[in-house]
Amino acid sequence: MWIQRRAFLKWLGAGAALAAAPSWLRAAAGEGPARAGRPNIVYILADDLGYGDVRCLNPGGKIPTPHLDRLAAQGVIFTEAHSGSAVCTPTRYGILTGRYSWRSSLRSGVLGGDSPPLIAPGRLTAPALLKQHGYATGCIGKWHLGMDFARGSGDAKGSRRFDYAKPIANGPTARGFDYYFGISASLDMPPFAFIENDRFTAALDTEKQWIRKGPAARDFEAVDVLPALARKAVEYIESGAPQARAGTPLFLYLALASPHTPIVPAAEWQGKSGLNPYGDFVMQTDAAVGEVMKALDRAGLADNTLLVFTSDNGCSPAAKVQELEGKGHYPSYHFRGYKADIWEGGHHVPFLARWPGRIRPGSRSDQLTCLTDLMATCADLLGVKLPDDAGEDSVSMLPALLGTAAGPLREAAVHHSISGKFSIRQGRWKLELCPGSGGWSSPKDPEALAQGLPPVQLYDMAGDVGEKVNVHAKNPEVASRLLALLEKYVADGRSTPGAPQKNDGPVDIWKKGADKAAKKGKAKKSDRAMGDESSVTRETGGRPGAAGQGTRRAE
Image (cartoon, rainbow, N blue to C red; front, side, top):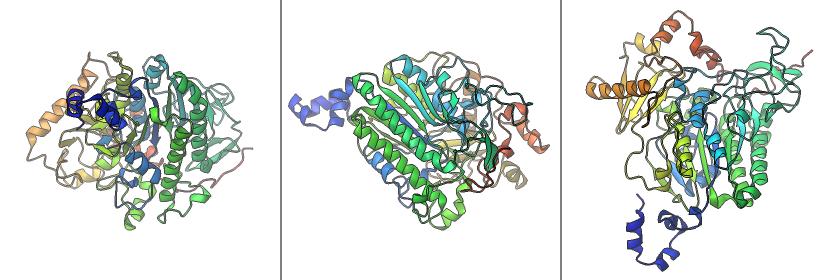
């Protein structure tokens, strides 16, 4: 724990000693240049990267990640960071809004590439908040939060149902960003083309397939996406540097589409890991982070930039995890499960942060945090209070980042699986309201019930981080307390102090309706968005590395 300002000054005893102290120590005392201005913020979000895929978090890992390791050495490692969901869209919703996605219309699964927007027009987002206070805001990469394509001349399901030549409405530039470049959703979801601001950069006059088939630009190839996003991020930093140095800080949300499927490492990276294509793709992703770090150095912005790296959920089984584990590499580290699951492997994510002069190099934090915490952290950096109807599930991480937190910052964190199953974590205890994984790992919930497993799981994470021993029967009072807290969070429309808010619809924490529908082989339409769990399974169930396979030209 860092020294509080008064005790620190007394300990040093004199201003001369303060001047001789390291910059991060001077900043802790409220001194130094970092106090004068607002920091630039660069928030890098990997796609389906496991906690154990980062070498500094998993000493036994087999994938070199030198740039992420350097970032950690220069800043802080959060060992208890969690995504708001075990899959893509809901986590991204939480990052930008500070609100759990299960409060929205999306209560399971993910959106598709042509889904309508999930973030309501009037909802405050983190970039909009920063923009209100003088930041230039840019989003580069995978959006996956929906946008409105102009209607075409075809029927509702035909290939011409959208007119991709017309401007796109309600995308990133309508949700707080000044600039956007990227793809509408996951790299295996059509349309396959780049978007800049509110238009596609090329005509979608052909059809291609990466797991899914759909409209595409002729020159769009999945293997080119990661290099293109890294290049655009560097350009954004370089172009914004003069304004940032002059007093208009920048916020860059860089949402990489890797190492999600299709797993397509560039030719120069193939075989580098000695494991499989996924390992190669992780190495290339690490290198992209290194390019951003170098750009900040060249632009003279590194010293006043809060740089964050994290992942939207755990590693997908499509990485061929059994093959990786057979070679001694464990993408989920010592956690149970993978992407989509309610177990730790689904949502326990890497989180590294650097802010020279403010964050102590080589530090670690065991604070329980959630990716929904960006909104409140931005407000804290700005010195403003969020309105009651914004950031309902966001808690400022700033005290943990600066090392000044005197105790737990979060009362608890709520976890959510792909099928909409709930879990709540408080201190050492984690309650899961499902009998199995709640996702793709075995046993899935129907399997678990067939095996006679209890409908509820309770784990003591202090001694059982692998979630191996269900202690619900021995600690019913703990389970009851956590259940009551979760019910309160749902009823209040928020998990933070403030006026109660409304959820966007009924929230069923036991998912009884979904379970009944699943038994009948159906899915509730209100819970589907892009599709039900089976369709979302196709998001990671195809052939990794199949870029360009089956590509054909439109007639």
